[in-house]
Image 1 (cartoon, helix red, strand yellow):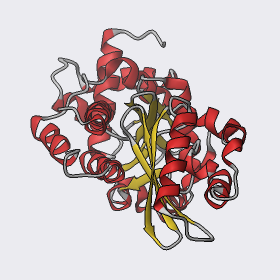
Image 2 (cartoon, one colour):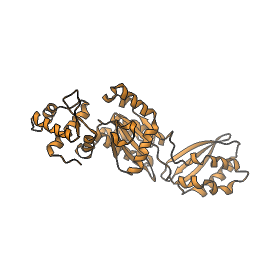
Image 3 (cartoon, helix red, strand yellow):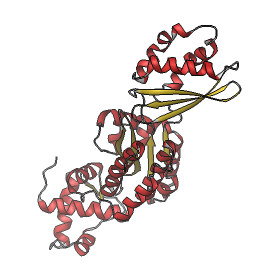
Image 4 (cartoon, helix red, strand yellow):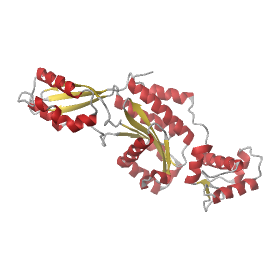
Length: 347
């Protein structure tokens, strides 16, 4: 970490704080008038020049004020910003929105994304849990029409996944019940990864003529019933309107870049998957080039895992580098906590 004097820390903190609020370059007179530092404009200006030499501030050619660099933002996030906190009304909003008694699981994820975007005024993302380590609790097979069945998969943590399958021929409910019993005897207690890798051999002795249609269907659909991850349906992304209202995107080129990013969800999923495996339960803040993805070099990304027993997903906020880091971090920490409890049915 760059060693700074207390004066340099204070001035850097106030410059970044003011720039986050206004999106305008910050001059020494603004700092002198707005913050009680007992320093002259000239002293503040000299210190700002020193901070610029250290690579923490930048000096746009068209302005006498300064703006933070990525290095400046990193120091601010690591040691200078206010303690992350949410207002009581925002906490109430999150708790009311994530009411597990009235919302199915996927609706909870969608609502989480929407609430995060409203609070942070940026793009919010929530991923479906990665199910590779999910432990199967039970399978239910429910006939819903001629040759159509609903497969209900419950994992140990209580999470429920459903999939509709089409049979080529009708099969009686009594036979479906026998298949259901057999599958539960052979598969309960195994992880999805173990089931996918050994599914066919575990049920091979059920491959008699009377059960063959449904057994073949389960073999062919094992990757869908017990998935690792489903890219197409894996992310809930909201807040396009919110992020486009930020002054950074008044420029047509940057406007286009955020639209392209939103349309290419795989970029966001890739980053969230990487951070999910790297960060465990920690919150991570990636600023600009730290994202290691060209499409995200102009943005900051704040990510945290939420937990559903043995599996986890991620919540994230994507915004300009000039985001309100303290509030965003507080919102994500609280949302991840409330979402984890809501999915488990806890208060």
